[in-house]
Image 1: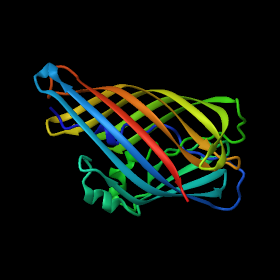
Image 2: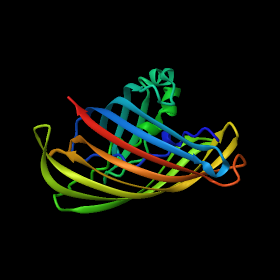
Image 3: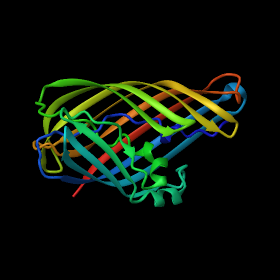
Length: 261
């Protein structure tokens, strides 16, 4: 059965954005906790089932600056670690420290995909762990309003790339308290299609499938992202010369983001 690591690159979901209106640069820090379970079902080829379950914790600093036509976003990895089952080597996570990613938010708050700057080769290898930590907040929303977004996000490079096309429905659900501060809870639900390619020890493989997810995040009255939590489930198939029939793969992931003061 091929070694499978789509969990690290195929799960980018929500777009990146913050409400506009600020002039001075804005800096915030976040803790990103992720738990992922991946089951590869090789029963049809006599290989049985393989289950991988691991958690990662990442601290990042996000800086927004005004720019012509919108705002630039700079994300820096302050630290990253995983448990003993994490398939990314600890040395890679250590090397990712200081790695940078960039995105651009246009005037409406619609961002470009988060991409590594090239200052850290290790950052590219952990890119998939960060594509789902900072959700889109439409500028000027009011409680009770709903909106939708369609995004296309590609992670990886060359023969190891995965593209996720996703439709997300948002709703500013209610005023709440988050860590003793006023906030608005925004719910999000999405459906997606996944397609890509991945090299394996047994040769190249094709990946395709669907996914769905839901969750909620919190935004302060002045537009600061205060964190949130969401889940997603993907039903995928991996095919190639290594197996007569496509290999089913199920991925379940939870992400929890906490603003760090």
